[in-house]
Length: 279
Image (cartoon, rainbow, N blue to C red; front, side, top):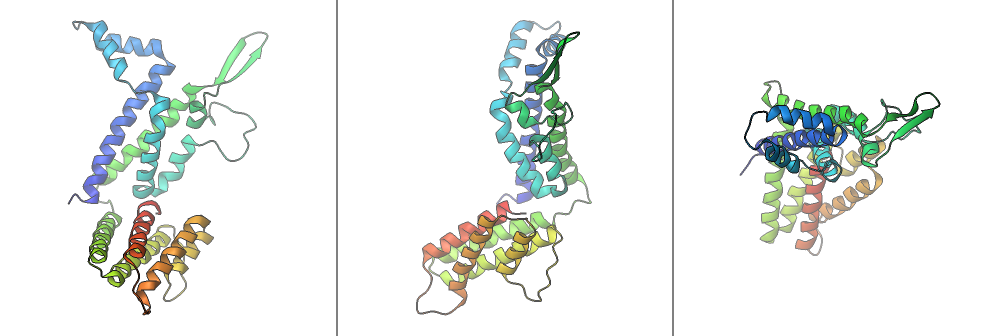
């Protein structure tokens, strides 16, 4: 089985490659003449230069069509492996929540570029002058790529803490075990294993966000409440965790009938989503 570490490395290399291509694409869109000149120098003296240049340009992705998928995948990876930079990564894309009195080159975002926003002013001496347009998003996007690339340095550094990667592998293995138990009809055992994974993960998320846990023996709902109070999770996620806890409790408390395999399958799927998306 491929380890999470290997999977992350493969995903990271793919994101870096796609990011570099997107960076070339937006530069071509914004500075076509300069880009043509660079390609002309690159293929200077080569046979069939015009065809080579044309082929190169055709291979470039559309920035507007491809950026959102790259951003979503990259944000997920940054959030998990470099959480201290996630807010920076997000801010380069998203318009600020507070109202911008003026849109300038400095506060123009990638989201503005995707919407085609252009800010200009006109005076009697200079005529129309562009203040900010898609070109202003290029430095922001380059910073996003640099953040993604910096993750690679952490993989290669002996100081990189792989605790959470190892833990993620362990959770995957335990949830696989829970699935097998459920298939064989051991619903209570399967649910108990899934509950342990959920509790352990929420405890780790609290530690990640430096949230103090004062109860001596906190429960899943205690962890969820702390995460909600500290705005790590929203109310719908908090309610989902409560529901998963109710399913887990069907396994822990002896009743006349065992929980159904459907109940436990829902619990396992729900826990897996929490583990993969809440950090």
